[in-house]
Image 1 (cartoon, rainbow, N blue to C red):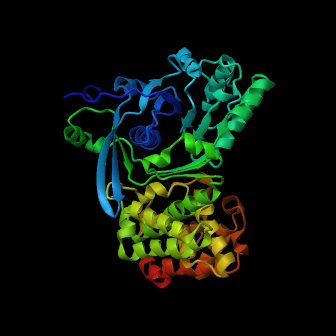
Image 2: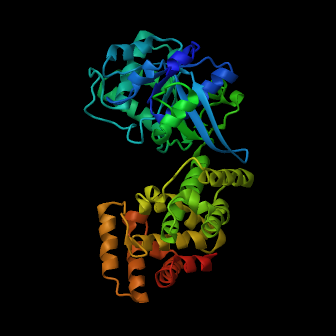
Image 3: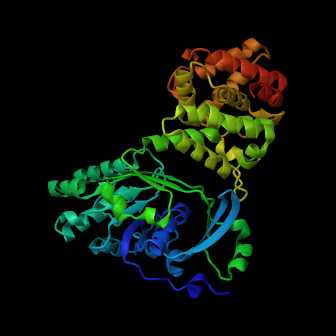
Length: 481
């Protein structure tokens, strides 16, 4: 059978983008967008991909001439759709571990304008052991600083040869954090005041927020997919239909990066905070609040949960009645996003296991759900029933069994030990449940506050926990609904 590089002739584009990371997410998200801009908005942007870690896919990417197939599966325009396209935007890949000189050479390219990255949340980090003379530096910001210094020297500090950085790592204020670390290296390596000024005045560091579920390489169906495509592709990647990219940037960035002309769901803003809050509270908050309830209910996946008559209602009401009213964006925007989230949860092509989402549920509740609880209480003068019920279910979930069957809890050792001791000392009485709830809610290390101080919360959680423990989750949830 032919290979993808023997089947498709790739157009040559001007190399305008440097991308750190060759993994599934960037190939199914940013590279797809650039490919659409090339095809629909005359962007003419080629991507040079840099492998950020020692082990990666650059050799395979170059072997396939930068080509790969992207499948987008899910609900689009109220219809279940499965579409595939060949992405042609990647010009070439470079492995700085095997050819550091080739890596530094890209600094000479006068057309380079954008730097994109997704090196995981741990990637934007400072390593004090990195040195300018390393080949390469261990950290992503270290490698980047070395490249920027090379460019600064080649173009004699030309203010027109700076970059627009749009990092995609899932950390708050990712652009600002990246800039901060680069300046730290500039200081550590004594690269001079002129270079620091050039970084500061000639480069734009955008904060950004990305949103698309990317399951990745379809290992279990690759033979069927290969037969369907009629060629071999080692880099097939699958993603959902939904996509959103929020970029906090000056107006001229939007003109230089014409995503709007390609009909993409990209928002340019001067403050992405409300968009980040919307995603964390609605998408992630819905996930976190449904998990302990749905698992105790006997369900296994997100899709099963939202399609179940009772649990589906629980999730929908939690989102629209208790989370959305706590947010400040226009109601129609929030309702549209919330509706899209429910469609994404129903995606028949994605098997999203509730147990996998249950990892670190306590800290997730603190960051994703608790702010909605507190804001709802502040605005409405009462507690949101379903979100509080979820907290009670979380405490019951960490008893460590569902219908007598032991479950594998995924949390820090300290938190698991705390729950184990509490439930071991439980004497079967309502007062025993009160002691458990009061102790859990008092843990400021988890919640960043003593939740017992929130008027009515302790009693509500105790009431729900008693119902779950005495009558089971199905009867308890009917009372909440």
